[in-house]
Image 1 (cartoon, rainbow, N blue to C red):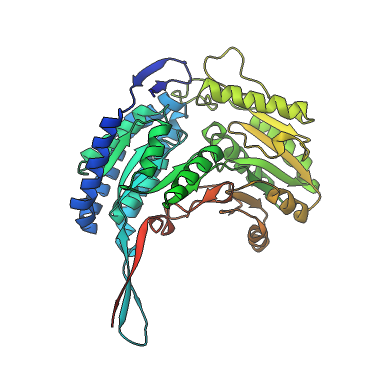
Image 2 (cartoon, rainbow, N blue to C red):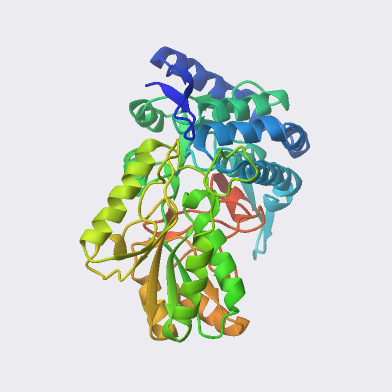
Length: 456
């Protein structure tokens, strides 16, 4: 298969890359396996730290060209692209600084003898990564696992090949040996073959439910561990005692960041009846203020979607929602008289449980608005989803927010904030949003062998 870099603002094809042949892929797997066995697993934490710290330093030095590649390939606003570069560098630094502490041997208390649990690397890991955060997603997979002593192979999304190559070059320039970090332009069939390959020890995927189901099945067939970070339809609950200005501000950033193309976007706005009208009026006004344009231009506030296909999919979802009874309060169409894959900021209301939109993930600037009677109804609606990634609760009573948060069937809950990601916070979900965790201390524990060593 070919990997194409297409500017979603101009629809111009920038570059095309051929996929790897099976022979070329075999050479890369051999290099990765040899690197693990003969080099990387034998290095010290201090040595690995030097490489990752240098990679973080290089990311910051190359912020402008790296950010420009994101914007050119998937359309992100240039300011947000710069932010992604900064966050990715912070993740590299975080694991460089804390990996040895996180993986320190644990001495156990026993009646006789001595016992210690050590964390050994397991080998060659495969990461299947998406296009919406082309550096951040890779950094949160690669950084902890490289610091743990594993080596990583990355199959990136086919529409961000320049970003993929730039990250690989970054690791090479930072001093990573051949095979420690390997970018792969490969097909789905080759991914399946890699998962089956005895030299591949585990696989991590960030992507759609469908892709997750395929990869999880393939990994299970070969008795290999997998982690999945899949879709989300995060609930954004606004209770009657919420700070309304803050709630609207975060609903806007939570729904519209990255043009709404985020797993943890605030997709379902669930507002109690007592303040629903006030919230909706303010939110509609704010959603109407976005300015479409060139995502490289600092004056632009509405970026295109990642591709024409992504736009067509979103339009079809909105049309289907309306056909099944939803009302369009705002937007609902592609932006007229503009080049590129632009979707109008959209608000859908009156969405009943029978509507397909009720259970779908809208990956773009479309907000689903629900009125509910009270807190209990808000929790019930929030949990009535196949997804369980993140969610938000807005209330001026933080203890109340914490109590509501405990009732939500999700992997993450943010009180008085839309979803955020920092190196220190664990990231992951439940239900159809996947399993396993990335980032924080938890993110480095997924692919290590917790080996008991007992001496009588």
